[in-house]
Length: 353
Ligand code: ADP
Ligand code: MG
View (cartoon, rainbow, N blue to C red):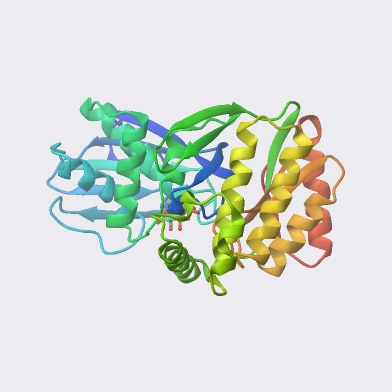
């Protein structure tokens, strides 16, 4: 890939990176102030930053082979530069003064596959700015600023899950996160297990409109039940008074939160896998964000020897499935499952494993 020197004719001042993430349990719970359980994936996004020789920011993505120049006072209307410029803007709003910059992004995180390349770019950029400007920012503050950048400057109404995962998680452990309090615990994987991720090959076309609709349904359900957020309810029976489809939406969120909390008690690989399978069924039947390709892929994974459990991961309507499998056989398991998925007529791809 192209280097910083090739684009900007100078060496960068600083470099920083952040990983993509996959969520193991706790899907569509973060905007309900609930619980999530992500881990980092090996793929990273790297940001190299230098000072601009003129009065404009210059942003370049090696992945997109695209450069964008922006005057510091201007907003970026579309495209990848919104994420980078957004990080600069939220820091400026927090009172920091940022000079015009040259920024190169290079990433191995698949873009738009549900592995959160957007949070990786934000967290890498903010880490780079922290280093360049010697800012005093904690990992949690970095995550919060990244989320603000995405919400306010990229126009994506996301929760805090992705940025907290990119900022706090590593590939060997899971992060239990309470998205209301931001309390967190680092947990080991069940002994002898590893994750694998397979892309369904189906792009998440309906994802953003359906996401906004599900959010609105959850808010309506919380209002009808008299609570601030669905996180405040732990008994799924409480949903019985709600009309459809709110009843099903709320039931997913409540049971999903309970599944994440169950992991905190310490569970075996088999029990963890069963929670993942139940999560997929709940996303399919109650939250209705699955599609035939994801059901097929999750089903194949669940029925492959050596897999403890599998589910769709990310918002749904396409994207990837994650599975927990025997560590020593992850690669061969992923290949076997992919071959069966291909035989079923789909065009999948191993992303992790
Ligand atoms: P996801 O976060 O699941 O990968 P999103 O739609 O939230 O998908 O974010 C993808 C967007 O993030 C891209 O369309 C692009 O604007 C930006 N992005 C992420 N990584 C890069 C990169 N390496 N180069 C340029 N833009 C990127
Ligand atoms: Mg994203």
